Length: 84
Image (cartoon, rainbow, N blue to C red; front, side, top):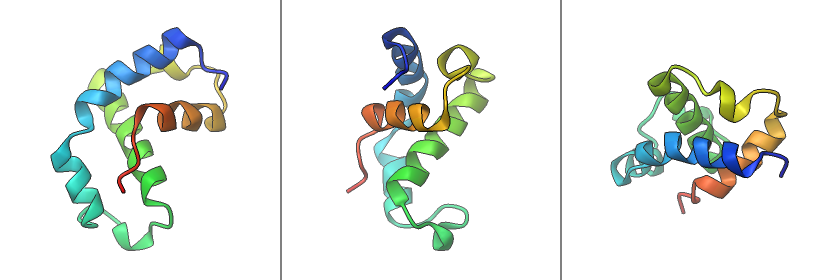
């Protein structure tokens, strides 16, 4: 993973408050927009958390600026536990 520890911590601080039991249940039950189109539920969940955190904080430029999508996804996998 190429995301720095400082950026990983910043991303974690933005995402963890949104990763609630209630939200996890909604995703497990498929009660979110376009759930019928999802092929990888864990990936969808972690990226939805990422975008939700971005909206709440007004963006996450310091955490993700310049990183490839694959590196951000690796960081998200370290932060967000699988739904299963």
